[in-house]
Amino acid sequence: MKRTVDGAITQGAGGPVDQTSLVVVYDRQTGVIVHVHQAITIKGGRHPEKREIEVTALGLARRRADKGGELSTLHVDPRRVKFGVHYEVDLRKRALKQVPGHPSTPPLRGGRG
Image 1 (cartoon, rainbow, N blue to C red):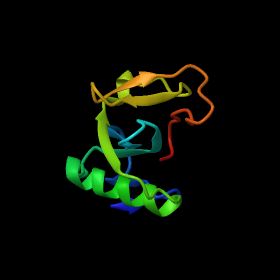
Image 2: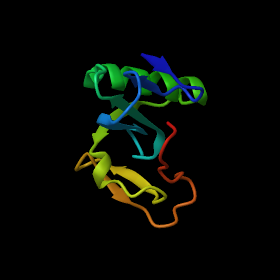
Image 3: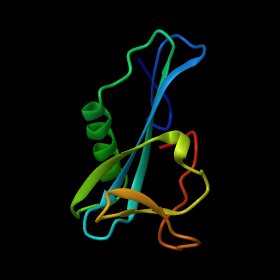
Image 4: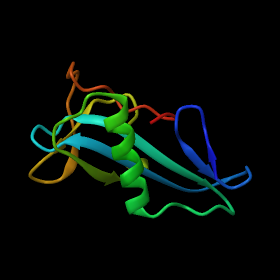
């Protein structure tokens, strides 16, 4: 296991990607996304369990900013996310929804959590 400068954890010795998971941390009251976290496992590595990814993502979200509100996580299929698009969590459906040009929600971006 190797931790990169931005806190991402990679598994394996290098080579082709075997598995990728994406978790968003959001405010339970508003659906606003406060952190995006990816777990990328290289072939031959051990991919973290869903709960491990959630715990790491919540910890980073709380450490990086004053996020005193009620936070929750949502696992998202990374192949269905358009990076650079603004999203929030639809609280009723527990699913991502696009929010065109919403200024308070940073766009999802690849490569960093």
